[in-house]
Amino acid sequence: MHRKLFHLSGLVFPVIAALFSVKAALAVSGSFLFLITSFDAVRMVSPGFNSRVFSAFRPFFKPGEYSSFSGSPYFMGGVFFSLLLFEPGAAAGGIIYLSIGDMSAVLIGERFGKHKLFGKSLEGSAGFIVITFLVLSGLSYSGVLDIGILPALAGSVVCAAVELLPLKVDDNLLIPLAGSGVLAALG
Image (cartoon, rainbow, N blue to C red):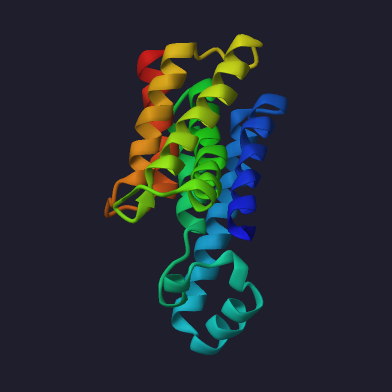
């Protein structure tokens, strides 16, 4: 749960972009990307430090991350590169898919998941689609984001597929890029 709540922190970057500038959001997310990646690199070369960090912050790590990079650098990389490569509305949508959709898939999948595919539940994927579509279509309808209903739905479906599939690259990097790309292409 701690790990999924961390995902919500990604929402601060589109807010920074909207309130200040995309450059400010890039500077802050890029700084976090550098710090988190450096931190994980130090963990990998210092077994004692890694043990202490893993023990102190166990709820934020998956068991397999003890001997590898955590999902955090990928998460921040997805945020940073979405902001860098796409216009602000599409980037914000991609980051929302990551921050809200991934968390929704886990919470709904753990609670209601009965049908598994690739080790993940189809119910979680459905939750990802429904929740992100409702959030993005609501933001579109209210005028906060100019993305449109159909692009929001297409992005929800594509990002849920990215989250579900057993891809070689961490989905924390791929979800916001795929979502931003769909929104940019269809918006």
